[in-house]
Image (cartoon, rainbow, N blue to C red; front, side, top):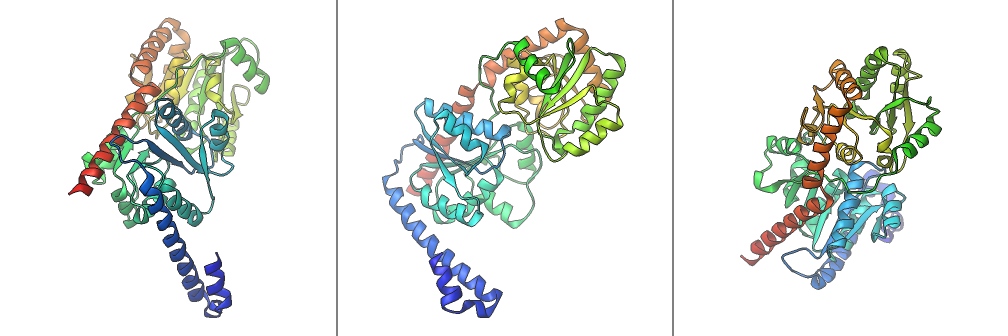
Length: 417
């Protein structure tokens, strides 16, 4: 900051207009980067060089709390339990900061401004063996930081759309040692943009085995919040109100279900940019009394036992890990085949799976699970068994640790040549 002020004001750089501002900014950035590189090199000397990572910095720059942030925290907590010194770098004031503090996970607060965030990442990277990015912004900043501090870089990709085709995107994926996709569906998107197969890995998200509150307790909480009529069965959904979740299809499916029966209400837990649009659609469909938006609720998955059916209407989905939680909570699932959902929901084996955007098929699947409790129980039992066997937090963490070891070994081999 002092270098910028000296160049722009004391040396009258402001008289040159935007050119003077640009020169002052570049000069101050160059100076700050040099100091950061010196700090990185100092920290690098003390960092261990073992094949398995001892110190991992997980970077998540999101302002909100969604599935990716929950998976980030679960990963860090389990790694620390198994002896890896994992820490979080996160945005100041974010829900992730509050959850990390509550869980006793050590964290480093990052500035909100991207240039300041970048400089701090450069300064702190030297004390870690490996950087693990969990968001697109974190990946971009760590790719830039790696020019100065070439630490091994692992990137988790959770979003269900291909990366942009531009120079910077190609640059940042070239800087990543390994891109870990949360589903085979996302991995296929990455291969389609010519990311080499040996730089890809698939590690599915996980669901923690936890004790859920009693069903009646959860129903009472929702009933009190939403003034639900007594005796109604609940078809529920937990998701942000954003385009990939396609709640419009769920609303239309609900219209079909409620036209046939009066023993059901629909409840969506979550908030987002489409809330007002969805409220208008609800009014157009005449569903004000049968379809309820509960808004964002912390630890929403703890209310899963309140649902008789969990309905997922996504048109795009990286994986849909809330479906794993539903299985462990004992709730049968009716889902669309969006994105990675078919990798965790097998039709008539672990749930009901219908085409994306097909509200009639989704309504039929919901009605079947409401009408046939034995079918729902069979699907839940199979799904829960699979989640415990294949999608545990311990299994996910072990796979990440194997990726870290592979990345570090490859780095050491390259530097020894």
